[in-house]
Image (cartoon, rainbow, N blue to C red):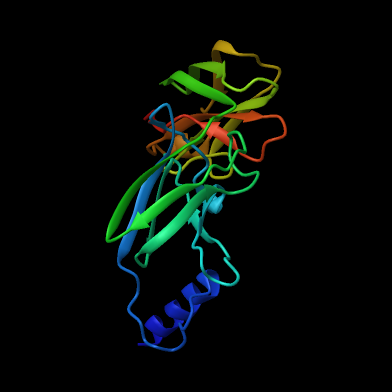
Length: 225
């Protein structure tokens, strides 16, 4: 019972629902589920630390504080909430895409599946990561989607779990002074890496940061061992 009361108070504080109070309402069981996509394909992002967020608003309430919706590393998101009509937008100046913040109206009754279309500044494609002995090699293609932006750096990260990014990793190398096109390089010597020497499973992905942006766009995770 106490859990339900606390949950209701928390949800009231962000949605400012009229007449919420201590009415012992059940926790919400309806679900908004979806992906952040470009040309129909999910956009990879940093998944740890709740770094990339969408925001959910509901009109008709006095304060209209947004509910955060966290985007996972494969570009998907999910939130449980009460039925109703909501507006879903990207968070201001957050994410490796154009900051246009178009509004998507979601009419929720039980379940809603939603794709949020974004326009990235750059894309990564044809990503290949391979481990030969203790040496990791990579090949990937960078294309510019939005003009007027420069590349800050590319990064290759290796981790011992499926959750790997520029914060959660066991090995990393940044590549600067790169341009669009195909990049092929021998990246990392892992022979002295503790996780490599212990025989752990290893996963890797490529990220690309545009100058002036707070987040990198990422390839999907690849198991390299």
